[in-house]
Length: 417
Image (cartoon, rainbow, N blue to C red; front, side, top):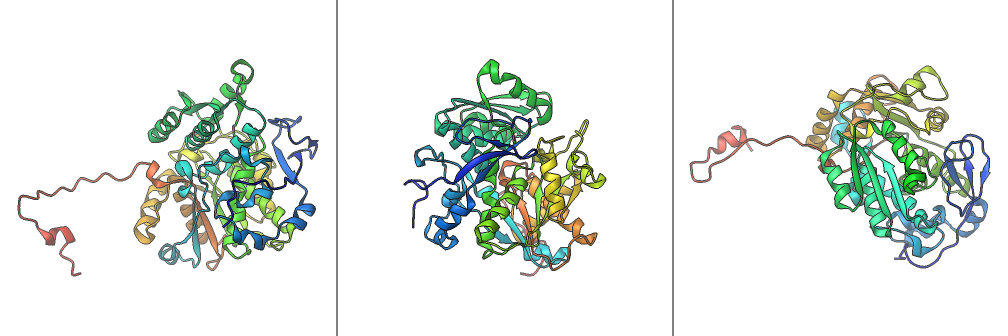
């Protein structure tokens, strides 16, 4: 089995491209946003790559994210910053599918990654590129999991990290960020309101912003989710993907991966319908999609109990809306009080422990079935973007006194085995 982290492989990066204007920007230099103030996307010489790498060669490589190195931007192996980004499983949830009236329901369980979330993919690649391009200090605003990943990978790379979280971010994640070596601050505001602290500090504090879509490389790490799905499904596409959408980097990355794979001849023209799952109380992309708009207006006063969906606006709004329409997809909003029951139902029926954002995709799947937005026989993928162990769980109050008599009938509810 080939080690993906050692040995040089050719780079196929040709340039960076403004997602709004298409204007080319030079690769190999440190970039934030484009000259137009919009996200930059990495472009590859796919014709040359197609002559160099056959998808069958992947079978000989270790099952981690870096098996796709030719489709990633890091130039030299010595700059790869890795904590073991394993391929994550697609887990069938047949009992839940039957209960809701569907057939094939799969959960992409991203909680298996380092720091317990899919943020590891994007930050592994982004920090690797930061190392390659000479960054010594990095910062970002975060609802939690991105901060934990930034802290871990920056510590691994010897880069200082600074993280700014909303006051009500999950306590365990804030502690995780500090444990992993970042200097972390609680701030009175949501992630959009916190963003200017990072932007305004670039000159004053000398850090590089790793905020969502404010640099080109987190998208590249997140696109490996799409590459993995294709490979795991025998190079066929699912019918629909439900994705918890805050900043939306992963949805953008997967759509980019599908286009690159078709250009390489690895897949055909079929695409899954992409579904953005947002909160009913903080859903700027869903609202813009419903209105037929090309951009989203910031959601004023948006709040939700689902941390990863607490994003009132994203700079990639126009890309996300484009992806939804190009894919024939749609957006679904969920209520806060629907999330925890769905989380419990999946655990009890299929043994899969979802995080709140993953549970939101389950609620959205049920709504899509009930409203006839997807066929019952659609092969659907839900993204569980983090380990459920990072979030609150039901308290346990039942106790036994081992010294006294044990009422076993009461324990089992007097039900026959």
